[in-house]
Image (cartoon, rainbow, N blue to C red; front, side, top):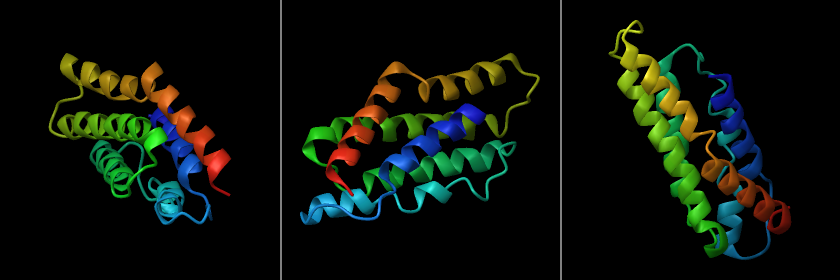
Length: 134
């Protein structure tokens, strides 16, 4: 769970910037992560349902603003990772923690947020925002 929150925190730091270049689309993208840094501030990490909802909201927020073409695929990869993890966590809500499928589902949720593809996409977003947003 701590790794998921760390992954979310990293992405929030990547997109929660105060200003950007004068291009309207780029400016909207650069400021789109403003609420992401606080997405988990009121979420109890032991509350699987709330964690899933927060991850789903992050996916929706990322997709709410058009990303620059250079990193659009990366934004979709990261949003897809959050969405997949959200769905996995939502399926855990009604499962018995003693069920072996519970552990497999929980591991699958966190693995997606730690995958090489997810991390590479997040890094490219970070590089892009560092270079193009200020």
